[in-house]
Length: 140
Image (cartoon, rainbow, N blue to C red; front, side, top):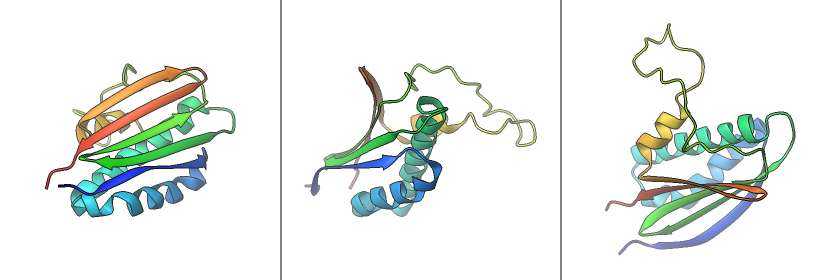
């Protein structure tokens, strides 16, 4: 039976300078549930989601982001913000996976990584909140 981590919630300023704190806080809570390889992938997902929220939801203004993590047979990561509406699940992106590094524009692959490394992605808009829910099974 997998250990249970009751939901832990923390608010962070939606600024690039807090990214390290976000990743460190998340790693402390989930590191014992995943291999180093999977943990690195989950950190990449968290980083991409955080940066997307900063770039889209809080494009030209300051704000806060609430991050919650819960483990109960699966990992559930929830990002909650009051920024501009942005649904990453439906967002059409410029797929560049088949281009060489020289041909690619900077950015555009974050959602590809999120969809590849997580088992489930869900977006909910509950005014005034954007809520992004990411889930990953824990395989022992």
